Image (cartoon, rainbow, N blue to C red; front, side, top):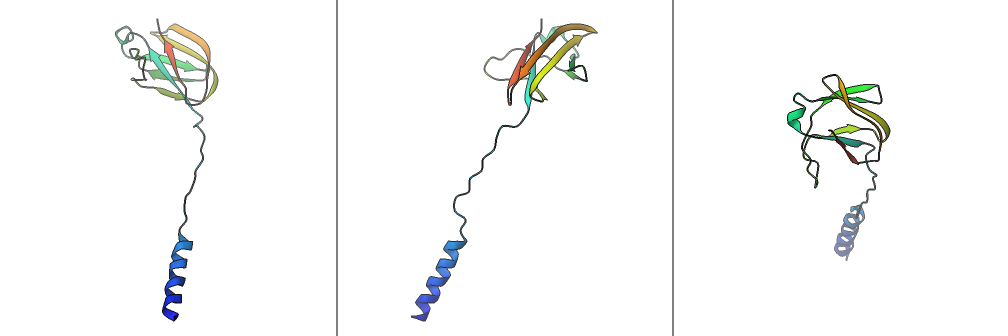
Amino acid sequence: MKKILFITAIGLMFLTNCTGVKTLSTGLENESFLEFIGQPSKYIGGIDVILDEKSNFKADVKKDHANRPKGKVYAITTGTHLISVSYNNNIIFKKQIFVSAQETKKIMLP
């Protein structure tokens, strides 16, 4: 009898130590992406991108792939931004855009 109680007690201890199902809830990351689309042969060496007249970076231009981004994408924060794109010190694109979380915005260059 003592043996059965001991085995039952050990079994219950193992069952109570199991954590069961754990759930996790997360939201989308607070970042968006830019992709620059055009003819890469026209923009050899890349383009200069100015974001909100504060930060600037070099970017590559890729051909358009309608089904999914295939080139390099550039992460930015969500919200409204003023994008200026220049090549050889000539502004070729300037526009205010709005991007939401996890959105990839295609910037179509002439």
